Image (cartoon, rainbow, N blue to C red; front, side):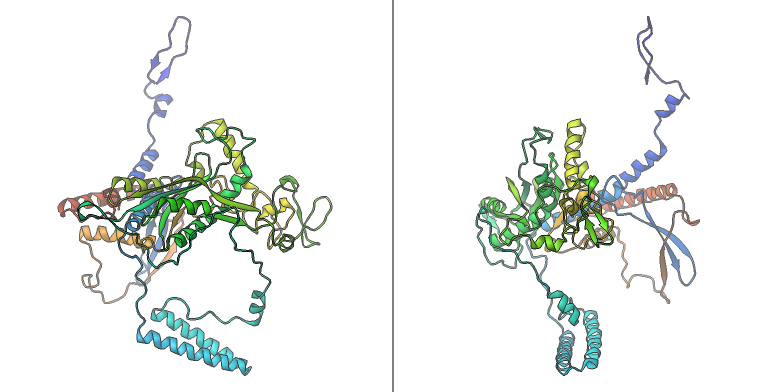
Length: 572
C-alpha cells in the first residue's frame, strides 16, 4: 500500500499498488523465505553436511546429508531448536531421580584380574632390570608393558593400571619450582561447615498428609554483585562511575567461581550434589546462572555458601595499563622478546613478573557472588518444573550479546564500553593483553597484538562468557547427549514397530563395505542445496504423518515425569 503525495487541493489517501508494478512485486513473499520457514517448522537443516558413501564391492555411490549440528538460531534454526530440546530432555531426566544414575562398576572378571597380575609381574621385572642398569632389557619390558596395557583395554577395563614410565628428562622437567599459594581462607570471608562427602546424589524425602511421600528438588539463581546503579533497561545511571573494569574481570573468571561454589556446597551438605544449568547475561550484561539441583538443601545454607564462596586470581598486578593499544611493545628478534617502544628495554618475562609478587601479597582480583541468591523448591511433574526447565534453556539458541535487545543509543553505548573493557582484559597467562601492562605473556611469541587475543571471552558476541554456557555435573542423568539422542531414536522405532535386530534382519551372505568421504557442493553428483532442502521437507512431512498415525493407532504410552513431552516426540 502506498500513499499519494500531498498536492494542493488533494488529500493523501492510501492507494493500492498497480498490479504488475515493482511496488506490487515487492509485496509478494519470496519463495526462498517460505522454504526457510517450512524447513524451520519441520526441523530440516538448511546447512547440511554432504557425505559421499561408496560401496567398495559394487562401486555405487550415494550422497547423504547430515544435519550441521549448529546450536545458534542465527546459523540453523532447526538444528538449534533440536539441540535445545535435547538439553531439556537431559535436564528433565536427571532432575527428580529417585535412584543413583551411576551404580558403580561391575566386579572384574577372572580374565581381567589375570591381566592385572601379569602387569604387576612386568612392573616387578622392570624395576629389577632398572636397578641392575640393564637398559636394553628395560626397553624390551616397556614394549611388553605397552602391548599388555592395550590388551587390558581390549578386555574391557577402563583407564590405566599405573601411570607410564617417564624418562629422566621428563622427570627433571617436572621437578621445577612450583609456586604454591596459601589455601587459608580469607579473613573477610565467613567460615563454612565441612562434612565428609557421601557417595550419593539423591536427595531426601518428606512424608506429607496421608502418607504421601515427596522428593522435592531446587531451582537456584546465582548473580554477581553490583557495579553501580542501573536503569530498568540495564544501562548505568552514571556511566563514569560504573565499574567496568571489575565487571570485565568478574565475567572472565565467573566459571571458576561457579566451580568453587559447587565444591563448597558439597562439603557443606555432606553429599554429592548434582546440578544442571546455564549461564546467560542479565539485562545489565553481567553473567548469572540458573541451575536445577537434584534434592533439596536449606535455603539459609545455600545463601551462606554463596556468601562465603570466592575465587582469587594470582596474577601480576594489572590495575592500570602501562601502554596504549596503539603504542604497544613490539617483538625484537635480537633481544628475543618484546621491548619497550621508547627505550628498547626488554620487558620482564611472565616468570620474572611472578617472582616480583610477594608471597604475602593480595591477589590481583577476587570474584564474589552478589547478595541476590534466589532458591526455591520444585516438585516433580508440576507446571513449575516445566517452566523452570524452559527458563534454564531460554537463551541457549542465542549468542550472549543477542539475549536482550539493544535498541537505544544508551544500550549500545553500554555494550560498546563493556566490550572495549573485555577486549583489553587479560584472560589467561598467555593473553596478549599482558603487553599493555608491561609484561610478556607466558611462552611469548612473535605476532601478539593487544586487543586481538583469540580467546572467546574477548569477542563482542560472548560478553566475557567464553566457556561452556551449559553446565551439567557428571552424575546428573548418567547419560551423554549421544545416549539421549539414541533414546529418542529408540522411542520412534518402538512406536513405528521398526527393528534392526540381527534376528529379524534379512540374512546376507556377504558383508557390505563402505568408504566415506566429504562431498563438495560443487561436485557433479551433489544436487543444489535448494533441491536437497525441498526433498528433506517432503521427507519430514511424510515421517510426521507416519508418526502421527502410529500414535493414534497405539495405546496411550506410559509417560513419566522425566520423559519427553509431546512436542519433543513429534519433532523426532
